[in-house]
Amino acid sequence: MEVRNLHKSFGNNEVLKGIDFHVNQGEVVCVIGPSGSGKSTLLRCVNRLEEPTTGTIRVEGTDITDPETDLDAVRTRIGMVFQQFNLFPHLNVLQNLTLAQRRAKKRGKAEAEATAMKNLAKVGLADRAKAFPSQLSGGQQQRVAIARALSMDPDMMLFDEPTSALDPELVGDVLEVMRQLAQEGMTMMVVTHEMGFAREVGDRVVFMDGGVVVEQGAPEAVLGNPQHERTRSFLSKVL
Ligand code: ADP
Ligand code: MG
Image (cartoon, rainbow, N blue to C red):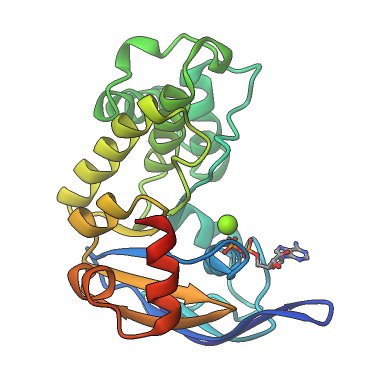
């Protein structure tokens, strides 16, 4: 996935000011930066929940900012996991996982359920298929949300602060699932404040501030030996 000179404004508030960014196949890129720096907007542009003002975004060579591009097709190839889990409260776990597969991928019931169960097992929740979201902890709900995204067989996964809404004791299980996904070779873009995760699992860390990429590089370089004062200042507050 390659982003070139991406600009995004809301009214006259320019939130992204010329972002150049890429994620190679199989790479885990962690995006860090202060609140309001444009991290979520960047992610939302990548799967076209937001329309970029100018710039190009290519996914496997296809320009997804082209008006001709089929956005539903883009979104089935790019899985997204949000801070809020966004599960349907009136559907059980299995139904939450099969709904989009049946609608967007036109899978039959048996295939959708088999795919759902495979991914529930992957996140350690095969035994909760019949539970409703309200019967699960926040960490379990987030793992269900990850399994739901994986059930669409995405080429790439986007995570927007997936553990920020969780009680501290529930964060580890979700990070473990993400770590396992990374080990299996999933291409991932992860906005996170979990610096331990960024350091251990990230292939690259990107620091954003004020709508620009200030610096990026290997985790040990960006987190251990930042070159810019803005990065140093941010890290001194979060590490
Ligand atoms: P981050 O995720 O780094 O905290 P965001 O991308 O959420 O930053 O927000 C960057 C800026 O864009 C903020 O000033 C925010 O108020 C503004 N913004 C984000 N989404 C919208 C929107 N839909 N309408 C207007 N302003 C928005
Ligand atoms: Mg955000």
